[in-house]
Image (cartoon, rainbow, N blue to C red; front, top):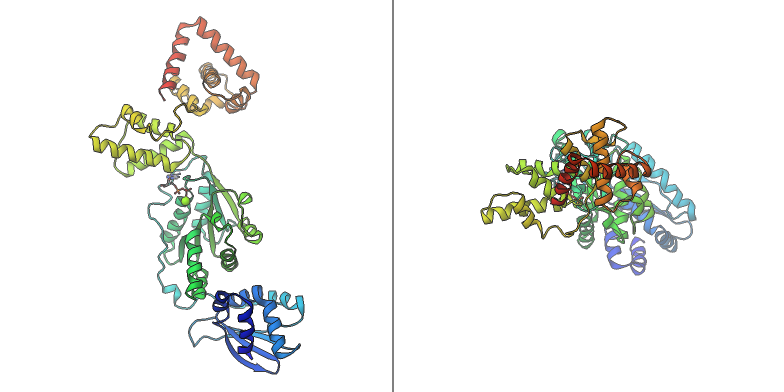
Length: 468
Ligand code: ADP
Ligand code: MG
C-alpha cells in the first residue's frame, strides 16, 4: 500500500523533495485501515505535517478508503536500540481537525521527553565552534555606541538561554562590530562552560549547507546537528531574504532550541522592522527577545579602539596620529583599522617614522571626502582641551566663567564651521534653545573685536580645527 502511495506522491511533487522527505520513510505495518510509517525524527514528522499533510491525506484515502488513517512512528534516537514511540496522529482524518491535533502531540512530546534531539553520546562529541579567539569581550571597546548591546551580550554569555534576551538580535551597519560581539559571546560561553555546544555560522553558510544537504540526502543530519547545539550564533540573518525553504528549516530549528531553553544570537545589518524578504513567522520570532543596535562610535571610542589595537600589536604611535585617523575615518571600525594597518605597512616599507605629516599624506586615499564636515563633537573636544575644562561640563547647566566661555566659543565655531542649524547646535550643547546660540555667537564676536587675548584663543583653536 505504501509503495502505491509513494508512486502517487512521486508524481505530485518535485523529485528533490520526494527524495528528501519520502525516501527515508519506512512503512511499518497496515492494521485494518491504519497505515503506520516510520520517520527518522520528530522534525521530519513536523515537516511532513506542515508541508505535505494534504497530499498524504488524499493519497492514503485513495488507497485505504475514506476511513483510511496514517500513523507515525518517530525514531527518537539514532541507534537501533532506541525506543521508537508512536504518536496517534490521524493525519488523514477529516479536514482542519487533523491539522489542529498535531499541536497537542508536539507539546506533550516535548514535555515527556526532555530533548528528543540530543542523540546520546553526542555531547561527548567535540564541535568546533568556528570562533575567532580575537573576537572577545576584552578586545571589544565599550562606548555609548554599543553599551546596551555589549551588556546584553555579556548577560547572555553569563546565562545562555537563561535570560529574556532570547534571541539576542544585534543589528547595525557594516563594520560596526556585530560579528565581533556575536563571537565574543560565544567565546565567553566556551571559556566558562567548555562543555556547551556552541556554533557560529553565517547565514550564507547555513543556506549553503542546507542546499548541500538536500543534494546529499543528509537533511536529517543537518537538522539534528543544529538542534543539538546549546548556542547558535547566526551572523547576518538579513541574508535569509528570499530563501524560503531555508527559512522554513531555520524556523523549525529555532523553535526547538528556543523551547528547550537554548540560546540564539542573531546579527543583522538593519533593525528587525526593516528586514525584508523574511517570512512573517520567522521575523516575529526574531523580535521575541531583545534587539540591540550598534551605532557608529564617537571620536573617543574610535581612538580607544585604535589604541587598544596598537597596544595589542605592540606598537606605539603619537596620539596626534591616532587622533587624526580616528577623526577622519568616522563611520566604520573596519575601515578605521584598515587605515591604520595600511599606515603601518607603508611606514615599514618606506622606513619612515610615523608622524602626523606622514599620516596625512598616506591617508589621503583613504579619506574620500576631502572637504569633510567638522563635527560638533570634535569642536567641543578641541575647545575643552584648549581651555582644560572637562568635556562634559560644556553640556551641563553650570554658569562658571571658564565653562561658559568654552561653551560659547564651541557654539560659535559650530555655527561658522559646520552646516548645523542653530537649533541643532543648541540641542547638542546641553539642550539649549536657538536664541542661546545666537546670543553666544554675538558675545564671541564682540569679544573678538574688543579683547585681544580672547581673539588669540579663538584663532588658535581655529588653526587646530583647520589642521584636522
Ligand atoms: P560587522 O560584523 O558589524 O560588519 P565586525 O564585527 O566585523 O563588524 O567588526 C569590524 C572590525 O572592527 C573588526 O576587526 C572588529 O574587531 C572591530 N571592532 C568593531 N567594533 C569594535 C569595538 N567596539 N572594539 C574593538 N574593535 C571593534
Ligand atoms: Mg559581520
